[in-house]
Amino acid sequence: MNWNNFTFIDLFAGIGGIRLGFESVGGKCVFSSEFDEDACKTYEANFHEHPAGDITKIPAWTIPDFDILLGGFPCQAFSIIGKKEGFANETCGTLFFDIERILKIKRPKAFMLENVRNLVSHDNGKTFHVIRTHLEALGYHVYAQVLNALDYGVPQKRERIIIVGFLDDVKFEFPEPVELSERKTLSDILETDVDEKYYVRDEIRLSRLERLKDKNYPKPYISHENMSGSNTPHPYSSALRAGASANYILINDERRPTERELLRIQGFPDTYKIVVPYGKIKKQTGNSVAVPVIKAVAKQMITSLKEYNAAEEKKNGNAAKIKGFKAVNNPDYIPLEYIS
Image 1 (cartoon, helix red, strand yellow):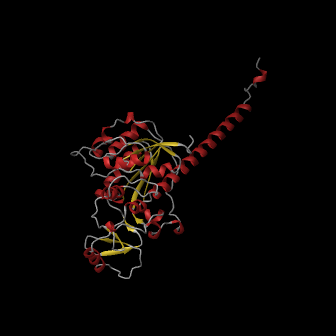
Image 2: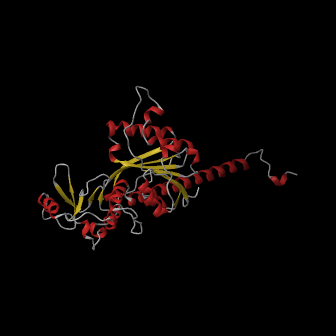
């Protein structure tokens, strides 16, 4: 197979962050699915297609054939019915089941899944154990690692588990962090001419500054108010969250990030279209992925698949040569020119 051109499906597509990562290495999306209609509106504006709706209602056989399955699936608590064990019960009530049933029917060469880092420790590790066990039971070789967006070029501390699987015994290593010189800083992503509507009221600003842990912290910074009420500045954003309060993060304790800045914090290009109000973009970016992380993983996956194919071709070529050599040296072998 030529991995310079491959196909993928984009499940739990959100606003297409994972899609952007795999398109960057030559992939073509042949199917997308997203439940949230506002996210679909943003997705359609940028990719010129409206994702199919609820994946739980879409039969796997109706999905076009594809090479790689992609999905940033929501993590719900796994439910085991009674004391029964087994395939259906372990995955009941979770959207992982829908990934599993599609993998089982369509048998793509590879997959990449993304989720919160707490997936590893959820239910004392049982949830992740069930996921990994079921993926391996389908015949996939599975790799998993928590990656931090800060290490891949965006000013956001966002730790997410990436789960990668291959049908063949592909050797895979997760991408190394990028050089410091290649990482964007807050100064790189902040806008200079910002409308007054993003600025907080004086009482909020003064309250935040009063509780700022380091009052001499150099600008620009992004502060994050934690549950206890302390206000901590950083030269990067804390992880964007879909359901966070309006002032969850503030730039220099003065204003909220703009829509474009929220997208830049996640590594979306400036060509990305904004077609919904601020509150919805805030939710959508909080639910999305850090695009540079996905790009790095996608590049590594395709490199590994190409290396596997090259090794297999070499192995098969050598096997054919050896077989031909034995045939020529077989005393019962008769060259074609002597057969009348």
